[in-house]
Image: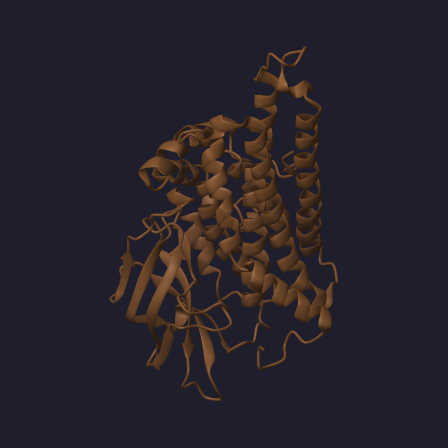
Length: 392
């Protein structure tokens, strides 16, 4: 079911099998996928989205989404954390495509095997990126940031935390400052608090920022609060939501694979031909899983291909990107749920791969945009009132 990857550079299958062999232990111990990261770094995967002319793999959004989907079928948490790293390279790509090369330094860091993390989730803010509960204060040569950041995947390994903060005293009105915080900066503290239902090996720790200085050279952009009309912010929507959707579809791919293997192997004394594969209702369940994935695959593939080829969707890009993420995650959840029905009680046991996939896939709805925000954004976009204030 996995989407074909058109590029010639891929993660070797034997490497992926090693990732899968370690995934359960990392989940059980709540530990980071250090060994996977070392192997991915060794083949240059941390620079998969860096343009080929700059020394990277040169994968576009559609190709990277396909690669991440394949990786997720073996090690979901590894894939999710790599998505959270790779989308920053995608933002640099969108900036360069717009003629702004101020983020080309991200290419050099990725080529050197350095890890990026996302510092956008915040307590008390359901409109991440466009608003912030983190404060920014303009000082000579840069900004000082203060606030709490959550869900920072690659918590033990990141060198750069992409974070945003609100400068309420900015000239002309409040502005959101998008900055890159370097690990080890004075006032930046990683809070090791990740102990969750699923996606445990991502180790997405909080980060406390207290008057952290970020120089102007590491400021991505500064925009009026609520304004998303900038290539930096466009990339921050299109790349992460696409890669997140791909990861959860990869979980769905693996769930279908496991369900099929089980149905062909599992026997019943009440079925004359033996295997559960001959039970008409199991056939219906397997078909429903395939149909879910096939439809979601079409949505993801169409969206990423349209973005890469420059389709002119105009204002419709906003509802389309939220729709794509919502559709792929929802399909993956339904597929995993059905897989548990096919496999039966064995899937409840700790250590069963489907039990872990069930927990991992539940995390998909927490990523932006969640169900509520997606329906708000899509509804307002279709009604033609997306940019109006107040919000409600």
